[in-house]
Length: 181
Length: 385
Image 1: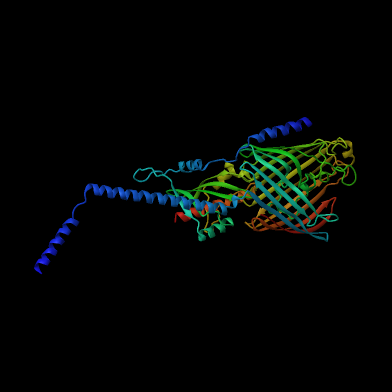
Image 2 (image 1 turned 90 degrees about the vertical axis):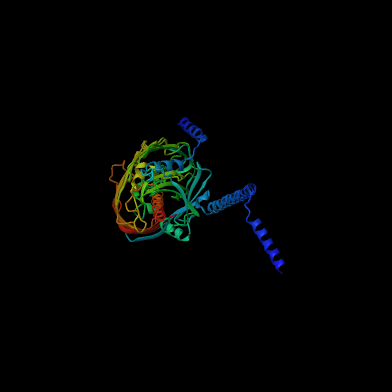
């Protein structure tokens, strides 16, 4: 049994030599995914419309609206987002329990059409990146109180990560409404 | 006078003729070049200014980003009031602080330090316990390694036991007395995700060291050494598989082999089998768990402790975002191996109220049966951050 003990510890040491970051998707890849889903990529004159990178400054009034959703100010002065027709794409971070989770969110006609976990840094709750879970957010929107209009079935042991994803989705939908007003 | 006026008119005409003269191409070229240089200068200045603004914004944002700190602090706690058969007790059951540090994107430290029952020390009721302190490394996107002192991957509550995440003031008696939660050991564990929603853990870690005689002989819960100058002659091995591919559903099973739960005093190997299901769909929730120990050796059998097992089932219903109700039936037996019917039972019915997702107030009625008696109720408040 001692041999097994030493063998296992040896394997762990070898494995530890080459550790890699837990990034699932780059922003560039997410943008490609999000805008490849769009069918309205040409203007009336037949010209190809490229997504436009824009900036949204988070002033006090907007931070107040964000705070009502995520319980704190978003720790940025401004957000960069991409827009093409009625579609916007946002890259937002939210701490689940301890470390920030990076999300990519694409919104079309005020509804989520794609959401992915780009990077996960928490100890527990990584199941939120599963497609079967993220698909629950497809076509979800918010009501007048910025609450999700559909329920999301959670994941045992990942409550805080699930809550973080729900809140960041509400925030993205609210921002989408704002820039499309 | 006439002469003076004529001379002035002639001068003005001459001057006007000179002013109205077309600039030469050379003059225009020089003008354009001059303006181009000015535009270039302005562009450079604007670009430089934009860069400075961007750098300033980024510098401010890096300071305001809560995620910028590599050190994290968290915690949870719960106060309980128990009134069972008229025996009243109020207790700050657990006060826990988490501290973590991120060495890099792929290597991090996590710890959990707990004060149980408010006061620790000689003659006091409480304890100060280090429940988690480990280094976690991402070996790949799907595999991570923990080494140090960590929670055993078993059961529903052992790894996730913050008060706002479960129903009932007290943790269920099956996971407490059979598994036994909260249970931590030192060693190393690998967690890997084979495919989406299907993961496995394998751990090698310090083992149990149960008393050999008295009321607690071969009692699993009493065998936890809590990694405090623990005997390490005989390690234990734990494997868990977990299925979470369907939203709201968790199916998991753990097996554990203890090479000797007396750490060399006797030859008493032991095996734990645990399986559970959790299902949440909309407002409805269900938890069910079964756990069983099988201990080798005549000595454990003599105390009826060669078999110890239990199960519970807990349906719940969330009325809205803030209120939920539940019922739980639990049965367990730590001396199942003897000829007597020594099973204990407990039924709890109650509610949780979450004024915030991380703050909970709890109330439940408790009825004890089997070889234990007592009716009463429990009230609690808990939080995590």
